[in-house]
Every structure is written in structure tokens, then in C-alpha cells.
Length: 133
Image 1: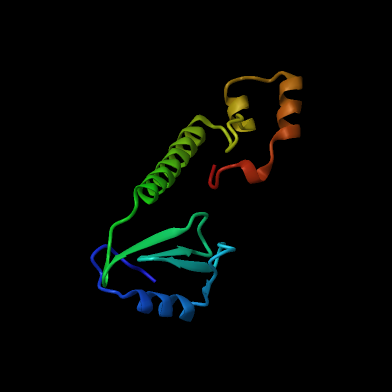
Image 2 (image 1 turned 135 degrees about the vertical axis):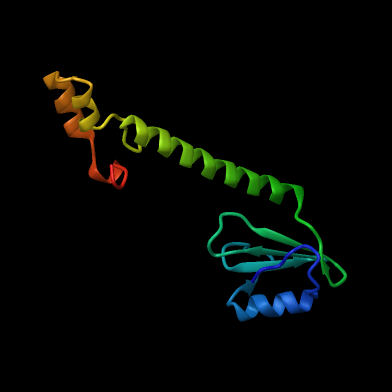
């Protein structure tokens, strides 16, 4: 269900849609797959999110997001951007996802100390490598 600021939906209609989507109303044990109603606000805890979403109503109209929700969205977006940037830098430098140089990079740099090679072979895991690297 998607709701946006300015949409014309009544509280009863939102509740009916949530129930049709298998959400349960629970005022005390608020967890994933539940929702609760507090005055003109419906709080929904989606199955796929880590935080609840607050839908504020002014009559039949959806109000904007709360400051906490805006901050959470911005933090989530910035975290995703950081992970993309880190992955790009690591891949370009020849490191794995944990920031450890790959064997290919070590050989390219001419590092052939047996203890370094043995240590890398012991700790490098295929699942930490980037796809196509």
C-alpha cells in the first residue's frame, strides 16, 4: 500500500486495507506485521522494514512525514550511498569487500613474501570477493 502526502484516505479505509494485507492491530506488542492507531495517527510496522511508519491524518487527508521519519529515510539513503562508494573504491583498488587486498593485487604489486601469501590464502574467502573481479 502506498500513501503520499495529500492523498484522500480516511482512517477506516487505511485500517481496512491493512487488515486486507494480513496486518494485525496490536496496541501493546508493536512488531513487524502489526499496526496501531493513536488518535489521528496510524502507525504501521511493515514486514520488510526495521522501523515503523507513521501516517498522520488531518481529517481525510494524509499529512507529511514526521521529522524522525525524514531523518531515518535520509540516514538509510546515506548509508546506501556510502556502501556503494566503498564497494567501488575497494573493487578499483583490488580489495575484497572487507578491505583486504586480493591475491591478484598482491602479486601485481610484487609482494611475494611466503608468510604474507600464506596469511592471505588462509583468510581470503570467495564470498568476500566482488562479482566479476
